Image: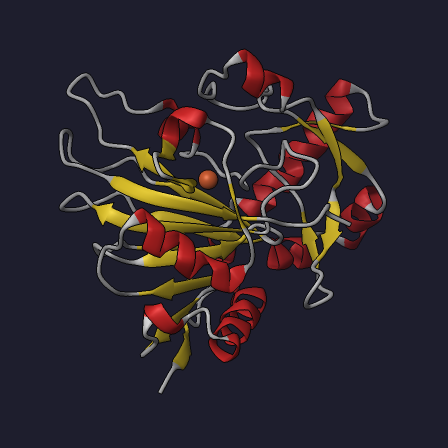
Length: 279
Ligand SMILES: [Fe+2]
């Protein structure tokens, strides 16, 4: 029997007893998609899979899409990207991993950001490297009424990079630059399944609030990010090899802890699920 076990924390649930090969059957797919909207994060333990198996499993949540950075795409399965965040002896790692150390939501620099992200661990270090998630419904709910009024109806500009981010992103090819002009999104979005409001924040990509002077915009974005940094909104996932974790980009942010041993492999497969423009 398949069971959905809530983490009892700020977000997240564990799906127990599901045969991954059957996830695409309509009953299971509907159950998984609903659990994602309600818990914002689902964890499915199991063994490492091939890129093709991961792509097929991901279809339970919607349509897998190819990702921006070509160099990460898995050869014959372009919908699966291979993310290598192994730490080198000089303390560096892939730029995407360094950027992922601060809170962000995936692909908000696209007009239609991914609905969900699937991460599947192929190799994990002996300790450290957990991924943390933030419930953006509860962040919105916790804002003072005056702040909610201030941001009501406001829109914000997201870009591939912003001077507000702590670290610079991976370099893009000319083709990739052409695909990533700045885009505008609502600062507060409504979840299409549950109808709940979520703060749509991304400290790595969100440059400014439309209609505000830079200083005022920076101060307000800092105030909003401060609420999201409070531990009461967070849940941490400690990886086991073979885990599948799927999160809802419509109402979460996430970050990776770069606190694992140098030289130990950390390799994940990633699939993005096609979304709808935020409203
Ligand atoms: Fe990410």
